[in-house]
Picture 1: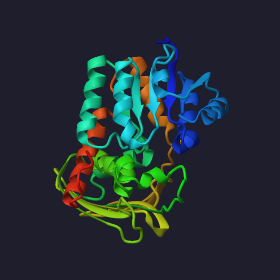
Picture 2: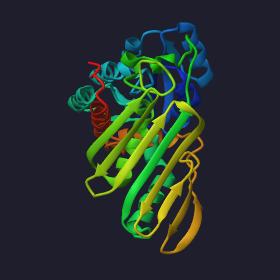
Picture 3: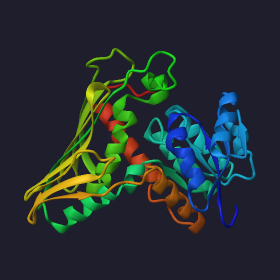
Length: 330
């Protein structure tokens, strides 16, 4: 590996790769984007040119054989994550994988085992772990300003109805996506809650198709009890017109209210009265995640979002769908 730069290969050149991932890999300090892969070669060529990659591959396994690459970012549909991550680890590449980590905890375990046995780093793209507003929430709770945290409510709403043939229509296929909004972006909110409150000890859940007749749910809700005593409600949907990305925490002496996590503005009511604070995330939401992974590899430490964190979230997701009596996909 280059002493000064972590040399990246990007597997998958879809929506999230174009919007944030490729530019973050290219622009991070001590990082360089070497190659990309995409099955549609004409799109791989243009993508490589747009983001300054040296070369492109139509087959992802050919990218793994590139000796100039030290690490791969996997930005493909969920059903491919485990196969690609394990193959990358066996090729001696460090792995940063899009969320959700895999289709189930068993796949996560195989990914973790492969990375451990090959001595490479493994991380999962839960970029909200690095949000300044989440760190600030943890500080306020620790200070005792809102008293004992009692109940959290976290909500993620959007309208998602892609036309047939749309590049994102795979999200509606259970065998490709794993589930609906609870699986796709509910996982982000589970990671945020575990980051703030610690381990979850009990899960109850319900899923439904309230508007759309499709293979995956369009709406879901989960109730969590944390080992520390806090309760939380997670609600997600693909079926409402009003977008929402909120987190509210209510304590014995006050509350913390965040109307939009991606913006980072919070309202605090507690022992010190009422106030507003702003803790904006990075302009590129993936940048701190990638910076941390680069540092972890170059300094030989664990990434802050480890494979085990990804596995923990996958275990909670599995329990949510078990509670809702949805058959396992594998």
